Structures are given as structure tokens and as C-alpha cells.
Image 1 (cartoon, rainbow, N blue to C red):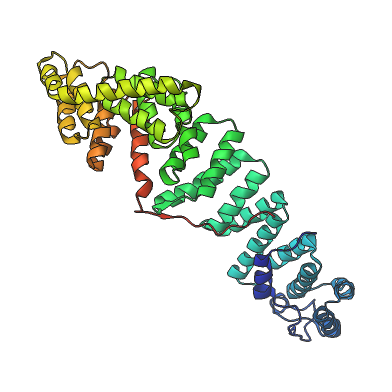
Image 2: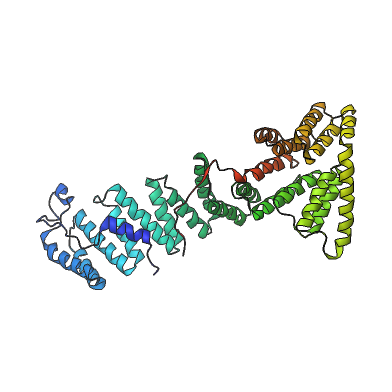
Length: 434
């Protein structure tokens, strides 16, 4: 039998004592009036056996104590309090011998009696749930945890225990229900959900092969715990979501780069080439520089090609910086806003965000765009770069596209939110399976 939890040991001492405290005795008999039978007294003939049992319990002679307890249990017409006293002593024996089954039946009898306060009964039930959990008897842990929550439904620690019991029992749908409830309570209280709870929820969805559910959890992970791994997993899910436009590949690379998820030289090369095609040589230069800084470009058998790309990008970036104003003039005279949006974002990547924002807004107002949502995405990114997070949020939330633009806009807000300390992490006082 596994070791009984410290939570239970503390609860046992508080609720039932050591088992050797004096038991009140009276000349009451089991066949007396009902109101007398409910009094905390035992019949006189039980006095000597009780004293002997208490002495044996004090000596930790549990085998002999149990024999005498069983003899007491054979008395006819026991009063409710006599039943309670016997159950209490059996609980002490169960704790001393680590007999969980006996402990459960003893606690059940005590909880169903009238001789404990409600908070004392609650501690017994919670302690029993924790004991079963630590013994990895998750089915019984669930039963006792639910029994506790029937009386105290707002207990965060017991909800957490119940969620983990469901998970470890491989009952993933119920684990999801419990974990969503816990995380929902955190949200209502403006607390950050614990990373452990989010990981368990995500794992439960994965076990259920619920891709949408798992992706939703990843959004929360990168919002609150933005590790490179979580970002990489989420960006993969976004890229492979049905309907994601290949037109947004450069935007995807932008997020991969800022979250440190560029691993392959081909990614840096493709990002640079896509930036050149978009008329953004300054951004292509940033991609190449990042590749060299990471020691991914400029090494291996493709080092010469990387050098050629480096030189070409640097040359175009230098020339482009000299002709930005001329490009702006041409864009303003065009029939559509496409040129204004493009040149505006070029100003943004050339560290002139305020000027770029004005041009992008003019382009969106002028119309004739291939994708207004894509233009809004870049406008939101420009506002983020300028430090106006509130305006960026407003722009991103206005994007309605199903091609990936709305998801990318939301993710840009999470990139910048890693340093936001406006809310505090939720703490969980939960047992851990041994």
C-alpha cells in the first residue's frame, strides 16, 4: 500500500485526533429514547474495551486494537455515536497500517454521521481524494473529489486534482471540461492560467485528435508563455490551416524570424527573395543579416551563393533608399492605392513608421487593392512598430479575412505582449502523482 499523503495526515490529526482522547461514557443504553441515542455518549459496558483500545492505539499495536474494535462492533443496537466512535478508531488503525480501503469506509461512516462539523467532514473527503490520487487510484480519487465539489464547488485545488485524475485515467473529454472550467475562472479573475494547466489541456486535445482545440490552446500559450517551441508549433498550425494564402508567406516568415524559429538556410534565402519581389530590399537585408548572425548563412557548400545574395541585397537596399521619395510621388499619381500601400510599408521597414502609416492609410482609402485585409495587416504592424499598440489592436481586430490575415494580426499582438505584466499568474495548490 502506498504512503498516505501529508495532506491527509494533517487533516486526520485535526479532524479525528490521535485516537486516544477520552471518550465520554454514560449509562445510556441503545434502546433508550431517540434523542438520547443521538447524544455523544456510549453505554457503560463499552467503557473498559474503549480504554483498552485507546491504550493499544497509543502503543501502535494496531492488530490487537483492531480485534477489540471488531468485538465492540458486535454489540447489538449501537447508537449513532457508538457507530461514530468505532468508525473513528478504525480510521486511526487504517492510517497507522496504511489501509486505504478501511480508511475510506471509516471516513464514509464519519462523514455520514451527525458528530462532525461540515468543515471537518469536508477535510475528510478532500483528504481521501488526495490519498487516492497519490496512490494513483484515479477512479476513486474522482469519486471523492466530486463528492467534495458537490458541497464546495469553488475549490480550485480540488478542481485541479479532479482534472489531473481524469487526465491520468485517460478520460480526456472530462479532463477538458475541468481544465476549461479552471482556465475560465482564471480569465474571469484576470489571472494568467498556469502553464501546467494549459499544457494538460493541449495534451488532452491532442489525445482526442482535436486539432482546432489544440490550436486554440497554443494561442494562449504564446500569449502567456511565449517560448520558441510554442511559437513554432502554432505558426506551423496557422500555415497549414485550410485556406491559408500562399500570398502571406513573407508575413509568415516575419513571425518566424521574430520568434527565433528560422532554422534552415533555405528559409532565410526564401524570405530575402520574397522581400525583394515585394519591393522591400531593406527587409531582404534584415533577413540576410539575421541569417549571417545566426551562422546559418555564409557556411557550408552554399556559402558562395549566400555571398552573392548578400551582395545583391545590399546593393538594392542602398539604391532603394535613394529613390523612396520618387516612388512615393508615382504612387500618389496612380489610379489605385496599391502603390501607396507598398511604398508606405517600404518606409516602415526603412525605420520611417509614421510616414509609412500615413501612406498606407491613404492607399487603403483610395481602394482598388487586391487584398484590403493584407493592407490592414501591414498597417497594424506599422502601428506596432511606431509604439501605438492600441491603434494596432483596433486595426488587427477589424480584419475579417479567412486567408490567414486575421490570425497573423492576432499573433503580432502576442509577440509584443510577452513583457505585459498587467495580470498575475494563477497558482495551483494541487497534488502530484508519485
